[in-house]
Image (cartoon, rainbow, N blue to C red; front, side, top):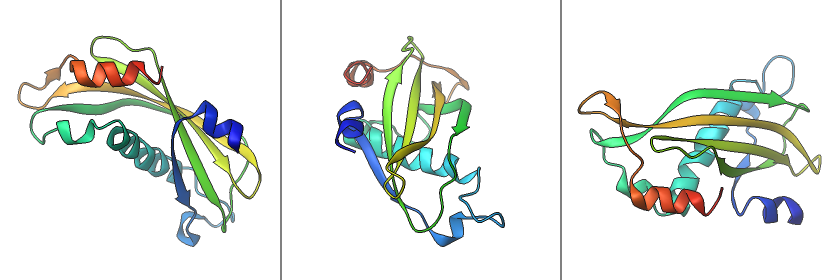
Length: 140
């Protein structure tokens, strides 16, 4: 776990809820998108960028998600979702996720989201702001 946290200085702990499981007795595949969302918002909060995103202004949208399931996760468990950043462009970047199970002491799931900056007033892509760009480079 210590090595995982060193590789993912920004990480979020998530407690698996009973309701996260499906009829096959493991966390349902779609729930991981919610876990990624929780970690993504926490990441933006931890790098002090979430407050700079104003409704109706410029903000991040997801244009693509990918998930690779390596091991099933069951209740009870605590997961640590680590995030790294890659492929930073002028208007987009990739958030890479690794999900570590405390019960299994292993990475159970990986994935990524393509994050695009979007101007909600014009309906067009927008440039990443300089403060966000600078913060993202710290975790690339």
